[in-house]
Amino acid sequence: MSTSSPFPLAVMIIRHGEKPGDPSNDSDGGPNLSILGSARAAALPSLFTPDPTQTSGPSLPQLTCDLLAGFEGEFGGKYGSSNVNARESQFFTPDFLFATEPTNSSSRPVETITPTAQALQFFKNDPGLTINANFTNDTNGITALTSEILGNPNTYGGKYVLICWHHGTIPELTEAFKVPPSQLPWTKWPSTVFDLIFFITWPSGQPQLKVGTQRLLYGDSATAPGQSS
Image 1: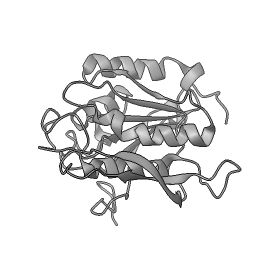
Image 2 (image 1 turned 30 degrees about the horizontal axis):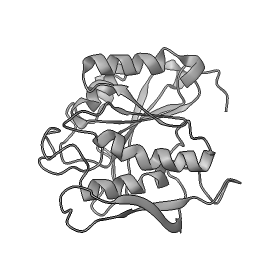
Image 3 (image 1 turned 135 degrees about the vertical axis):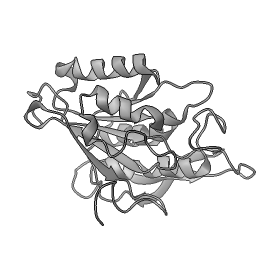
Image 4 (image 1 turned 90 degrees about the vertical axis):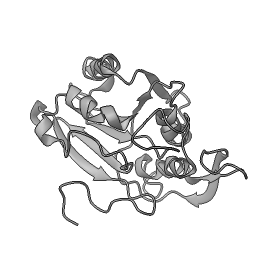
C-alpha cells in the first residue's frame, strides 16, 4: 500500500463495549466491561482482521469469552479460542491501535480492543502491534492524539488507524480531525448506542465522515443513523 498520502487511509472510531450501571455515566458501574461488553470485545476481531480465506497467513480463530460463575454484572472470565475460523472481515485491518488512557473509573476502551490487538499480533506475527493508551479523555488528550496522527505523515500516512474512545467525547474527537460538524449524525452520542463505527477518510485532502454498524450482537442496529434499511 502506498504511503505517499499525508493522511491515513482511514481513521476508524468506535465506542468501548457495554458497561455495568448507567450507560450515560462513564464513572458509574465500575471500571470494567460488562459481560455483554466483553462479548462485543471478543467478537470485534472478526470486523478488522484480514479475511482468513483470502490470505496465506495462519488460520485465525474467533475468540470467545470463558465466563466465571458468580460474575453477573462485570466480566470475570478470560478470552480463549472458539476453534471456529473468523468470518470474512467487514472493515479495514488496522495498522495502529489507540484507546483512551485508563483511569480509576474506566479501563473499558483498552479492554474493548485488547482481543483485536491479540488477534492482529497473532495474524501478523507482530508482538509490537500494541494499544497506545497514552491519551486522556479530555480536550488536551484529544488535541494530542489528533496531532500525533495528523502531524506524523511518515508514520500514519497511507495507514489504517483504529481508535476506541468514550462516547461523550467522540463528537469532539471527530471534529478535532477537522470533520465538519454538519457531517456528524448528532452532536451528542446516544448513551445506549455501542455498535457504531465512524470512518474518517481524506478524499482530495478534505476529511469526510461515514458511519457504519458493527452488527455483532443481538440487538445491534441494522443501519447507521440517517440511512435507510
